[in-house]
Image (tube, rainbow, N blue to C red; front, side):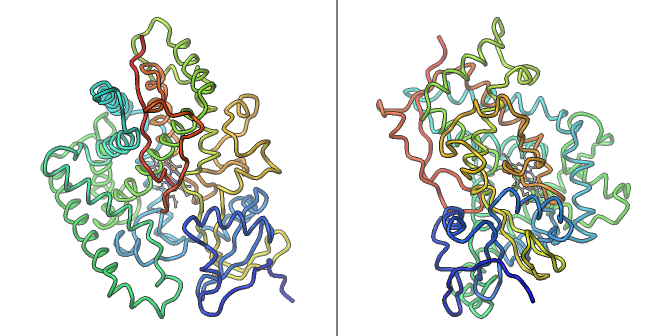
Length: 468
Ligand code: HEM
């Protein structure tokens, strides 16, 4: 006799869809508070296990990681990523293992991430310059962070920026459409009998258009790289396209890397690396502006460590524990990816419940990191809580998993950490920040937009006064 997790009452055909609302991570937290940390919902015809405690997450992403390393197939990413042939959206299996190992060993290993230091330093300097040039010292931090992270990923992945003139305008709007589509809730994935609607509401046409345009764009980039071949991809200056083309040519991966795989892996860097990074920076500044004492404390640490210097470098970051604690705390309160999808590969027993093979799973880092059983005053922004603990976000401590954990955990943590910490330290070093129009910190809104990454609903505006 099977023991299933508790499940709230549901409606015919749609199941529990109506309970999700516009902010599923918040609705699921609320439902879990009523029904428990392991809860079974039904989205259309698909059973979905909701796991919203550190214990449940640890079972699924550590103890039984292999049983839950699969991802559900979704129609939009499948189309956008050529199958899918990327890493993030691809089901568990030999192909995913190979693509992920290219990512880990060739693109995002520590040495490679270090080799992009100059790019990070140049692009954060440009961020500062753009702030200095802003009229009335009023800045749209959201826009600045989005541009900076896009430019960094462009340079690292494609070798140059695509931000100027007509080319820049086109690329920016393509990237925006691409990321938006990844966040679309596709009803056809759960109620196949309604998939026809996407032919009439324009969704299918939009996906086709964006897939075609991104493909053509990447074909152009690859062509440019072929004419401009770099012979040594271990040397500084090699970008991801150079590296992937060499892996393909020299059969370094131990299997034939198709051109579609190269394009899909590059697209993954944009899908997984841009919005997430800018969103974390945005929420960090949001919380600092809402908590001026914390902002001052952070600013003092940065300026003290760099006393007598004219600029912060990455070597200084090691000496800034409060800065690291502030980034961790913001990743706790505002996990950029609040829900992590998985799919059971085989029958499993989790915390005493029977979970059938094929069941979809949503692990909820957002709810876990606001769990009052794990965190004191969980709704408050208090970097101090991380000063005397070893809790980190690298996937070993399940009370804090903004980068996920286990086999499917984020391979871009080091990359993101450097960008976030350097940008934040430099902002603190060069500027004093306040809210525009004399607004009070407690008035700053914290509304969230809907999407796969949860960013602020409205742009974050601030006044940046150069340090005197
Ligand atoms: C603050 C920034 C970032 C956050 C919060 C973040 C978060 C995440 C999360 C939550 C996952 C899913 C993990 C899981 O299901 O267990 C993930 C996966 C992934 N991330 Fe990141 N990420 C960030 C930056 C980056 C960057 C900069 C890159 C690459 C340049 C990257 C590449 C990836 C890839 C390729 C995956 C898919 C891994 C797989 O399915 O095997 N991420 N990330």
